[in-house]
Image 1: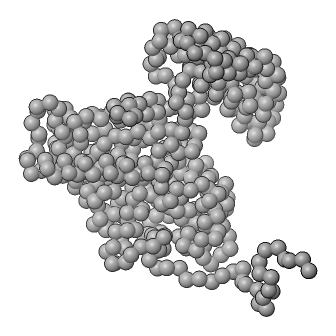
Image 2: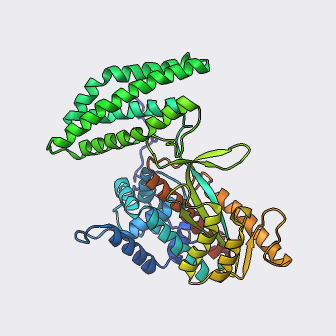
Length: 462
C-alpha cells in the first residue's frame, strides 16, 4: 500500500478546523495602540487629507479604519505591501489594529499602495504630527525643550559614475520604448545599432580600460552613441506627439517614462561632457537617471564623506519624539536656515516657541540667536563657533548639550532596518519622502506604545 504524501498516516475522526479561535493578548503592542488611539480624531485627520487630494468625493467611501491601521502596521515594522496584506489576513493582532476581527474582508496590496500614494509625504507627516501631539497631551513629550539637526536619507542607487549613468539610460530607454506607442517602437528598431555600440563600450570600459587615457577614449565613444540615441529619440517623441492615437494605460506609462528619461539625459549629457573635458564635476550634477531629484550631500564623515539622496531636518522634543521635514531642494535645509525653521515649525504645531532650543555649531550665528529670542525662545543654546561665548548659563548649557546629544540616537534609530528610513526600495523622490515620514511615524508609535504600557505597568509583547 502506497504511503500518503504529507500529514499523518493515521486519519483523524474529526479533522482540524481551518478557522482556529485564539485569544489576543491585551498587552500586545498592536492591541495597545488600537485601544489607546482616538480613532475618531485620527480618521478625521486622514479624511481631511484625503479630501484635499482627490478630485471628487463621489463614489464608494474607502475603508479608512482598515487602511489607516495598515499604514500604522507598516510604520511600526518595515515590510512590503504583500507582506502587510498577508499579516492583516492571517495575523490576529494586525487584524485587530485594522478593525477587521468581525469580517473576512482584507485590503489587498494594490489598495494599500494606492492609499499611501494618495497620502504622500505631506499626508504621512500630518499623521506623525498627530502622534506627537498625542504624546504631548499624555505628558510623554515636552515641547518646551527642543533640539534640531539635519541628516541625509540615502537613496537605493549605485555609486554615480558617468559610464554607469549612460548605461542605465540606454538600458531603460530601450526597454520602455518597446512598450510605448508605435513611434517609440520604431525608434527602438532604428536605434538597435546605437544600443549595441553603447553595450560594447560599457563592456570594454569595465573589462579592458585599465588606463585613464583608455577610459576617457571609451567614454567618448559612449557619449557619441548616447548622443545619437538622443537625436533619434527627440524625433520619435515629436512624431508621437503629433499622432492622435489612443493608448492603453501601460503604453501611456511607458511613453511618459521615455519622456522623463529624455529630459533627464538632455541635462545630464552636457554635464558628463564637461567632466570629460575638464575633470571637474558640473554644478547641480544629476546622480541618478531614475531619480534626477537626488543630489550629493557632503557629510564629512570618515567612513562616508559623501551621501547620495535627500536632505532632512529633524526636530526632537524632550522625551524623545521626533518631527521630520523634507528639503524641497538641496540648499533649503542648510544648518543655519533649519535652526530657525525648526523653531518656526514648533510654533506652527504647538502655538508657542520652545522655552529652550539647542543646535550644534553649524546653526550658530548672531543673527540666529537674535531671531530666536524675538520668536520667544528664552534659552538659545546654539553651540558657538570658535571662542565665542554661549548665550545661556552654564547650568542650561549642560542641559541643552545633553539634549542635543540624544537627537543622534533618535536619528540612528530611524535609520535602522526596522524602520527603513535609509535606502528605501522605491524609484521616486516623492516615494522616498513618504518612506522617511513613515519611518519617523513608526518610531514615535512604538515609543508611545512602550510608554503607555509602562505607565500601566504592563510588559509589551509582539
